[in-house]
Length: 191
Image (cartoon, rainbow, N blue to C red; front, side):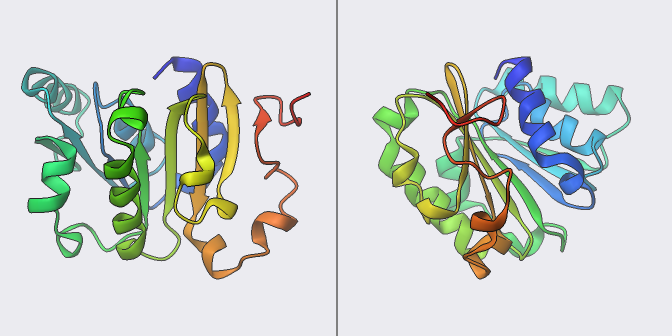
């Protein structure tokens, strides 16, 4: 994820990360999980399938004194969710879930990704937030609950955010002046 996209995501989240548990499903360097904690999240789970990179995330967390609140798992995300994920073992906090896999996954493994998101949404605590980063090849209309995602384009990236509270209140997105669907990073509708 490019720095400007990460910055845009946290600008869209504002103070909402505070007090939550971050789950970085395709952690890479762990930048999303670590930044979420720097923005007030209480703890984080980072899943990274590349073992040396997972060790780097652990090392980075240790170097900045967060090893007690960042749990790094070296595993394939799909395997972890299917075999090892225990929602009850996470802190009893709302989640901020980051789904930022390699963009080709949205083409090659799209059905798996949508099933994964559907299953996580079903067990997410109230007030959780989901952030999906893809490129512009991905049609956000196939996301679960497609009418409730706020979408922004940061070419070539596309970011979609869903707040669980909006599922309980279907008109919340309609009344939010910042929820212009498919707008660009200036908050204006594309031409």
